[in-house]
Length: 315
Image (tube, rainbow, N blue to C red; front, side):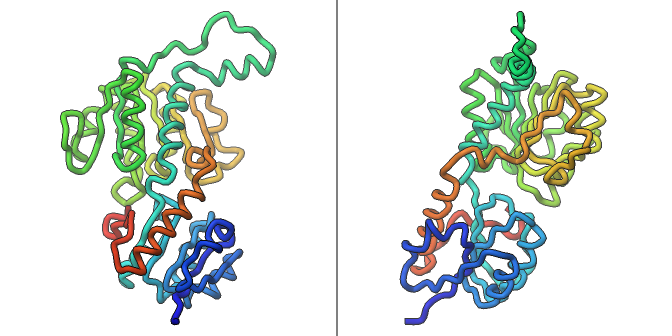
């Protein structure tokens, strides 16, 4: 029986090894150098490296790859043009972390609304506050949600449960609360919260810049759980310093990790959560392994894999 070579990370080995079908020939790797050596043999690969440039390099060496899988929802660390040229099917981690990220957004908004960071600081000093440092309510507020993929679709009902009005931005508006990609900027001044859940593409690069920040309310708050690249970070620093907007919660920054001397750490209206939103759970690898195994069965039967990345759109 001819076996199909698959390049797989040792990190996922405990969840996969005993469950792989007999037609798979696993090639396990621990380091980038090991992955580079094994990559040209692979027909199937699951290559997730923290360093995006290293991941790009390994995938580029997988010249015979027919299916690439990733735990990441974003594919900005992949050689998309080369994958498209090779007719490689790419499946990503869309939806794997959606629940915890949606919960993180709610936590971030409540933290800003109630100024809970100041409550924690007082508690650490054993100080009994006589009044709440934050008096904002989510109830009755208006939120603009840019991006309506797996994460956005879970954020919306959670905010509505707080009695918020939520408008969404999507390519094809399908409801009264949906706005087209060319119309949201003119409405920025209407919202108390602007939440970014878009993929990192050329189209979304620096989509929030000085003009957009100036158009927002002085009392508005920005929440970014997308990628750091979707915000002009220098413009955001200036807006936070001048109080052009009230506050920002950044789960993602440019670069990552954010350098210790970056000014964002020092701003009292900047909240940084170190790209932890998708990691605040214990099911990520289990869900990813189960999805990969289900897709292996589909691959063997010649059935469509899911979720597939549109290599033209980049998500």
